[in-house]
Length: 134
Image (tube, rainbow, N blue to C red; front, side, top):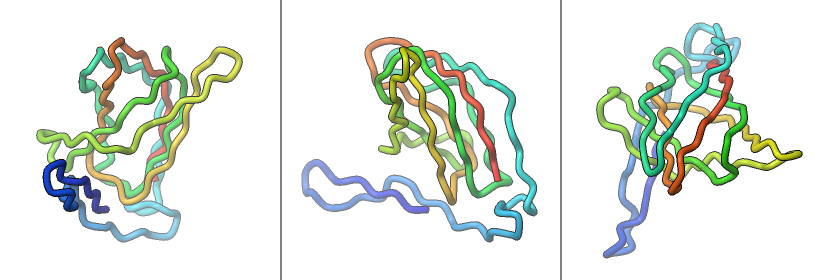
């Protein structure tokens, strides 16, 4: 997976994040076709902050995330291959309010080794989520 941004001065594309593609095996995942499903996870992300919690995706190639949140504003994903240097990417998790519950879901392929959440909103957000790695 390769993600590019745009240089604000020149308007030229700039590399934000790159990871080698992983071989997909029968069963759909880089982990030998074995999937991992989380239990409910609650993550609180402060205003304009990166979460301390992370999802370790190092032995899988795809992720499906779904859940709900305390605010309807979107939240960003941050990617890392080394669990040290996280890059905020423009893959916003868009939320939809259904009967007063702010829900979301997304699926990503060729994922990095680690994913965190970045809240660029001016208020704290609490996310309740489940994920499936495959």
